[in-house]
Image: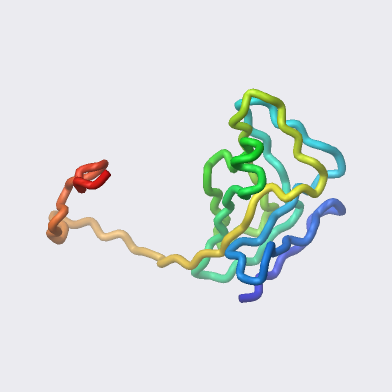
Length: 145
């Protein structure tokens, strides 16, 4: 699948793939100077790009394994969503889970983008739903740990 993207500023870097079969492409901080992310705080970091996703897909922004467990930096909303009709800048809200200031260097890899297909749905209100063995059991009621 080919995804068109546009650089929006001079600091934007082309997204890259870590390997031939990597599910996500790495996104980079589009800045010319280090950005500080204060402890237990969130900073919005622009990637300096916009994407043209195919209809029927969305872009999911996930943490990179290189900075999430090692440095305590992750997307603030855990998984960001880019809708197929959005053409604005891809911005990653980075949250610092640590008690120390973390620094994002210029053009550092900050997150990964995975393009995922989805079903477009029409909601239909009904009086009853189909029956299942599980029924309404939830939040640990499956009997498995």
